[in-house]
Image 1 (tube, one colour):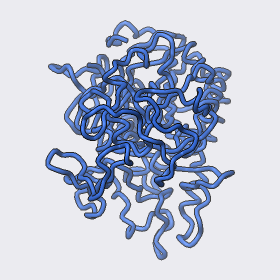
Image 2: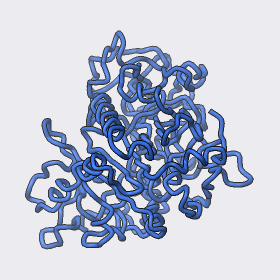
Image 3: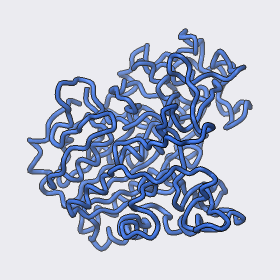
Length: 484
């Protein structure tokens, strides 16, 4: 899809009174929509993009074996020596439908850089810890969201905002920023080689066929930027409260990320009197769960027990910011449980901007859940909105935070912290089936929310400005606003 300005779309945009952003998890475009008719999908991939290289830059004779999570044990569901290239997960000889949960894949900052391989996208298998699995995809034509994509808009050049995982991409959704932690403990920092790549551990396999690479990895860059998952200092957090501390806070001895003070889109919306809320599935339960003493086993925070809700604290970016600390008015006003979103939809009363984050069982993240459960949940929520009084004046954006480590063939634009691979993005604009722009950066989701409020451009920590109308900084053809 071509890059366009928004000036011709003003009449449609002016109808919008409500924006709802639904933020799912960890699926690349080719992985779910690579077979979508008319899209820039797998059929458009070149032989170079499909053929995966080994660590020595030579083509793999076949794809590496798929191993069980965290072990060297081979997964018997996957044949060994699969042909080098993309393959169907839900077709012979594998036959794993979208209703079956599969393992997580590595999706970290420096690994993602190497997987993209200067835009060739041919080292996903070499850098993954999941072997051939990284090249798997589905025929999603029977998924509910696929059918809604036919009805509305599917953006096939929409890129994750930052390299790596969910934590960093949630930050970039709300502030176009990367947290800075200059005093981070030494054991949290990565070690890089002379090329600026992760330093390999002694004995790391030379070939992906012999196992995934082993690195001196960490969450913080040598110069103090937090690019992989850190925990919030406020509950809910992976870290329980200190024994004699405030139960609303994580134990500081565990080294949670210090509260951040960078301006967020929430700050900017509030300054312009634009109402907004971040709604989280199971938020109230997670807050209560987090406040339990360390001696009490968590019931839903990072739970992997069958039959229980799984809540991921690192998916909730505003909880990392001092402005939304426990006890503040802004926290009470802007961080709420998803049950309030559902009730507001039914009543036709929502803030002007709503962000919705499903909990782990419903967000499609590999290792937490399957594709189908989250896809059905999101589709049913859209149908709930369709039945509500909000429908004629609502814009809905459904997108995925990042690619989850899955291969995608389209080279991303270039940036310092951004950008990574394509993700799947659906847009439903009030009374419209026209895509305002098929080539989008994930931060543009936020910019759409304030189109009529006169907010200034967002400046990223690389100095870029995403213009409200064109999303294009001057004098550049490669930029992190999503079009190139």
